[in-house]
Structure formats: structure tokens, C-alpha cells
Image (cartoon, rainbow, N blue to C red):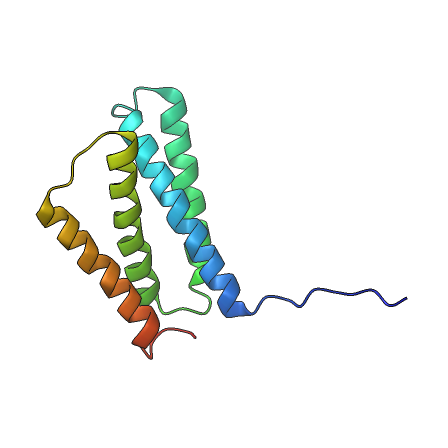
Length: 122
């Protein structure tokens, strides 16, 4: 009976997966940075450094098929959205109407870049 092999992921899919993981790790690192109290608490400090290093490593893989400006716009934009959500949920930080509208614009910009830009890899 012939073995059924899974198709390989396309380079573009791998880049987006790497970018998504980079964004999540950067968000975790930033949340840990808040807990490190200016790097005076060892475990959150180590966690911050590890998350940031891994995040940039994965970002570098995304850059194999993505223009740096597009990848960085997605990375920073979604990072802002995620860390704002983490701040609201985990740290009970408030978001006023202006912050919510601004974050909405950032998210809209990321969607526009991904959906309509000819610079992105589709």
C-alpha cells in the first residue's frame, strides 16, 4: 500500500507561519518585559530575551519571501494590537476611545496591506 504523504507547505505559507509565530513571541516578550521590573526579576528577564531573540530569528525567515517593509508593518501592527489586548486582559490597563479607534486603524491597515498590496506575496 503506497504511503500517503502530506504536501509540503509553500514558501509563502512558511513565511506567514514564521511571521505569525514571531508576532506571538514578540508579544509574550513584551508582556514579560513589563513583569521583569527593569530586568530586576530573573525569570521574566530571561523570558523576555529568549522571546525577542526567537522572534527576530523567525522574522528573518519570513523575510526570505516577504519584503522587509511589508513584513515589519504586519509584525509591528499586529504586535501593537496583541500587546494592547494582553495589557487590557492581563494587566487591567484601560483603553480609551481614541486608543481603540487608533488600534482599529492599525488593524485595518494590516488587512489592506495583505489584501490589496502588490508588494506582498500572495
